[in-house]
Image 1 (cartoon, helix red, strand yellow):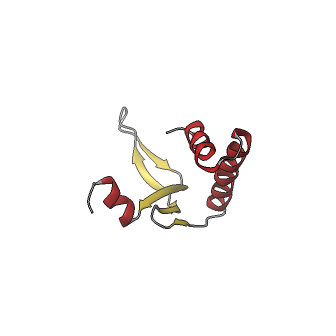
Image 2 (cartoon, one colour):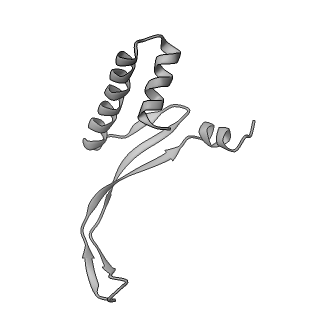
Image 3 (cartoon, rainbow, N blue to C red):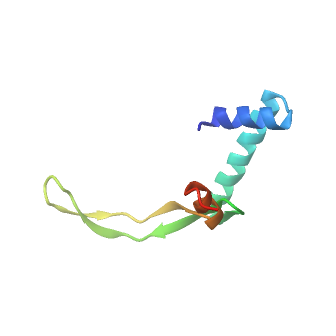
Length: 93
């Protein structure tokens, strides 16, 4: 599913114009991005949690040369699906 598919579904299910639907979808993504950049957790009931985690600096190895390198610290985004979503995906219940 693409962003265009989301816009189309919002358009079909809400009755808003396509332009309004695109603005709604874009605003939701902007709001999520802003909160994740700030390090906040996003919890969507019945769907799951988006969490930004810190990864520390660590030692790694270049697989081609075998040379040890330092992998810098960074922030990563993780998603943990809710039990409701897991159940729906697996066709249970």
